[in-house]
Amino acid sequence: MHLTIRGSERVKECIFMAAFSQDKIRRVVSDMEHKSWKRKNNTGVPEEVIHHLVAGVEVPLLHFPLLEKTGIVKEGFTTRLGGVSEGIFSTMNLSFTRGDEEEAVRENYRRLASALDVDYDKFVFTDQTHTTNVRKVTAEDAGNGLTREREFHDTDGLITDVPGLVLSTFYADCVPLYFVDPVHRAIGLSHSGWRGTVNRMGKATIEAMRREYGSRPEELRCAIGPSICQDCYEVSGDVAVEFERAFAGHGHEILIAKENGKYQLDLWKANEIVLLDAGVLPEHIEITDICTCCNPDLLFSHRASHGKRGNLGAFLCLK
Image (cartoon, rainbow, N blue to C red; front, side, top):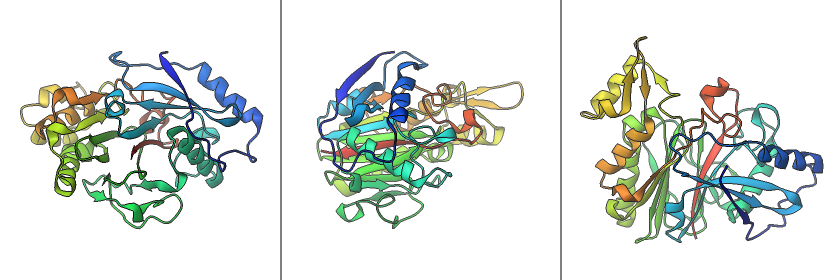
């Protein structure tokens, strides 16, 4: 397993950890030492980085080198390791709505904030309902969903040009889409399941960034994050028909017909097509080689767990 070790740049006083025992900390670290990734194409993208925090705690995150090289963002995608949640939520669950203990989830966010070197009260959550709605967020939105009630709904994408705000989207097989504009210093982060993909959520996000910040597709750096791969994603015939209509001429690239009347759908390729059609340059797109469903010990997967799981998160922040 290839990984990079990175120390925390800043340790917040609020982070750790009276409520959680050293035995639990040691168990989390031990778990990480014995797990390895199953990668689809062996591209090494995204890269795993283990962030060392206080009290011996280690939080692994997945990072995209293309985004990091812009020098203007902090970004990451969580695994299910490095937190304090237990049972089906073990250990880095980021959902408050699936039955986990609230304080465990909050501790997970404190650890995540330290690993990303961001402020705990600057996260801004989506309200994902498989739309293509994209919201511009400003300093007034800081904390929405974490430190205060979320003030908007039916929002699957976020954009901003405000440094320090942590755009936050959530997953357990759907596709994270990252957007970085190094020219206009703006960012976007969107959730794209099959409905979002067939309705071209990536294009909707790019158009929102163009409208609000003057972003040009050819200047964007984009990443397609960890999600379910084609080998694991069987869909019904009616879903396949929607994709054949929406991706005319590309059906052979994204769908494989099966004898049972169902299809294997490639969301990674479909989202790459969406980005290319929107004007993003091929060399400005990084695509995951990590499938959530192929790695159920390391990532939450709705399909692999039959719905008994926590949530992963994608995060993007302007420096």
